[in-house]
Length: 331
Length: 238
Image (cartoon, rainbow over all chains, first blue to last red; front, top):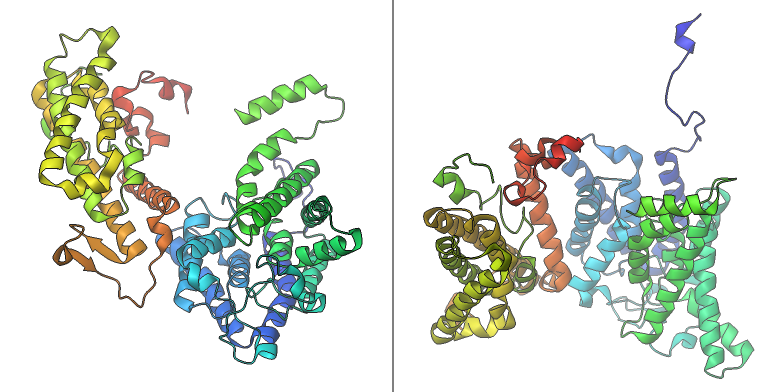
């Protein structure tokens, strides 16, 4: 018998064609429409800022692994995705040195110190954004008017979420992204296009974004109706509400990170609903305008518990045995 | 506690890195996280806690044959609390600024786990001299960590270094005004960030020196000296 054809290996024996590299490449492609839209809306400095964060992320990852004598994982493209998403969370006129600090936090502190890709407890770009937000609050909320409509590109303007002004930004501006905000959150059409690419390319499951965005819509609708608004008006306002702020960017690109989202379908539904409740609660009843990033961070931290509690029962196994098993997993 | 004689030098240097109370035993984290926003606080808290630690170690070691083991914890706490009261009175008299900026964390030295932990793990089983050395070593280990942490947090979080609040000659603006400080480091989450990074560095250095707790079991474990289940890790093959 020809020994070379008998390969003895542990399971799994059937492997999908997806590799980390291909998945990351797909995410990069899905992020391109948003980058292009952002560059058209805010001008060339967007490309510079994005280039700096991507370069810094890749550089820090290579440097860290070089110092720690680990294999350099730059080829899996995940640092590029982190850099892109981090840049999308920054306002266009953000100082470059601050962006580099954000990249350092994302890659070294959140990702590599915990063991690299697959071991990070939260989305690296998300924590980078939150650290920058808490450190340089002034620079992080210095939104600029898009050059195309505002003229002077250093004029600060309010994000559409600024208390009670949600309806003042016309729906067409929300869709096209011609209003103040961070790089990647303004152009809803480009984000939705990227999301559809990922969903139809079977890179991400549609469950989390759909439940998350739908949940926010329903909760806002119920809140509006509870406050005595007319159905048609409230429905329209709620639509503007989900297109404003970082919700689409967060729901499509950050909440769906493989490492930091639940792996069962039931778990994904729970995760999406949790994020929706947290986001609406923070937007409505806290002193912050936007709660998407904090909601996703808290959700990330709860993912191990969601995974244990929503474990699927193998066919034919009695419920009692499953619960014991889940108890063991939690311990 | 094994009967093997541990050299005095070893007792003294244990607290620096191998059994560093904050980074390796993870004791006394509350003052470490809470007061390290200003360099002045870090140094002050370190010295105050070191003083209490040495004194309480000596007294508890001297009384170790008198204290009944059933009520040892209340006895330890009474001894520690007396010295904390003493320290607080001294600080109020001579460095009122420190008393003001440490606030409630000064009387809370009483319940600092490092001091009770050393009383239980070391002073109640060793001679007076060794206990004094242990207190000094552990106290210095704590002071070094808490000073470095407040140095990093104040430098990056506020851009300044304060050796004495209210005294312009001893307060330095290190980062230029034009560079915005990372204010998160002065906030509670920043305390956890810096603490985590310091712990990672301490673990890294220990592992480089061949003391990996995951592989060496008790030989590499900082809590081995006071561990109730000593040796259990080795037999479990963890």
